[in-house]
Length: 195
Image 1 (tube, rainbow, N blue to C red):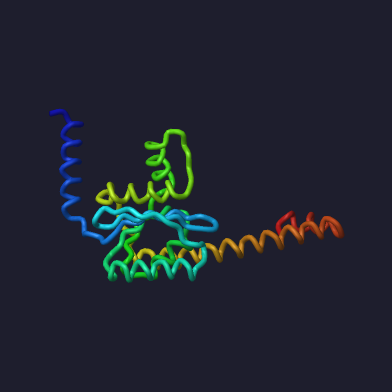
Image 2: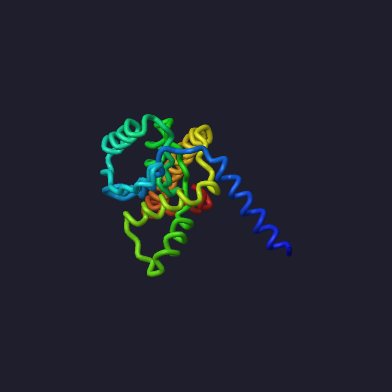
């Protein structure tokens, strides 16, 4: 056996072992963000697939999540969502029974392109793609750690605040420079352009 064959064989054995150690979930949900509605695709433990959408409003989203909690009796449900939607992530994190897998948008796009070479894209197939990706490759994906999430959200909040302050400073500096150019241009020479 050459080295590539050995590593492929070891990889497939590892994948089989990972499948055996996966904690079971009551359902897998692919959730695709939309401006007015979030499309979802749900596959329960019996293999039944359901599709739908939920309005992009916090009360509607929480109502839907509470319905899922009742339906599955607070058993763990795996969610696949794309990484670029922190508001959606924050809403789902409020529910302890939700196990979240954040999928890089490029990964889901490549997976979708495998089955739709035309590149056609709309919300329901994206939700299907995320659900399919999680159903078949959950053993290779890492769920989001809630402790990391709280720290990451705090860091994200601090970074956003800092960015807002920097933007305010830049605006104030540009206004001051503009006013000085109009009324007292020598001030810029005196300050050597450092406002």
